[in-house]
Image 1 (cartoon, rainbow, N blue to C red):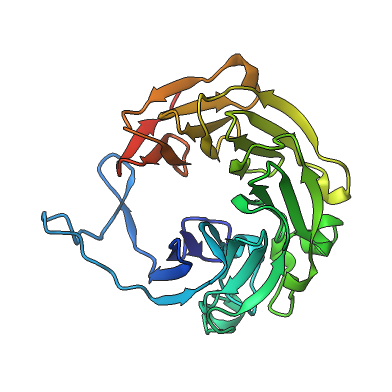
Image 2 (image 1 turned 90 degrees about the vertical axis):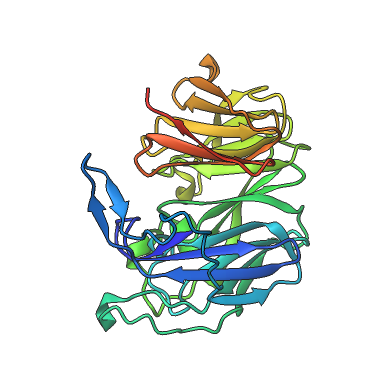
Length: 328
């Protein structure tokens, strides 16, 4: 889910949500920005109370659907306007494919542009493929988008390798490295190339991958339960990416998800061992700051942190969503 807004506030703009099925069917939903008002305790609450009366949740028809025949059905990401800059192609969907490639598909949803009084006209037809990179490699298992460098992303693969791709301008530290400098005339999708390959997880599928909010570190977790931390602060200068820390046997099962908290000091992992763990980025080998024995009956597939970093949520094979406090 992303906000369709080109400013710095990640909570502003209309909401766009996408989902992909194992057969490659992509569904996209749109919702106009909901007004938020402070409650009695000062926090924000939505005015949408459509299900507060106890009635069954209302099913919302997808705004659009299209199929991607080669998709893995498990690796997909919407590219937020803050990362891509205003583009004639509108909102883009990044998808992992069974042939090892990553493909970029238009959603048919335009990005508001202040130069056109926030006109969100459709610029490129839904389902149009803009580019495909990495064909012939191992199957993608995870993806992570760099928070500040234009169209720079990491791909964790089934064979344990991690590939980092970038547009030529971003990887060379040129004008394109700042997403705000891209305009409707720019089209870098044909310029994407692999600029680094990391092999520390060799042989163990990398299902968990994320950047810290400032983009200086890349966190990864694999099926052997290991976590590796890489310094990515200077990769755009064509310098090598160094591994700065390793947490061996961080979990007793597959690491399925990893999420850096907004304070840039901590990150959270979830695993097939039914636990969620909070770690200190600066002292990773000191052990987890906290371990939540979640109560999930099986694998904890995903974990995500709140915008303020005070809470995180997990979802498991048992269909439960659980929320935890991350406050120290």
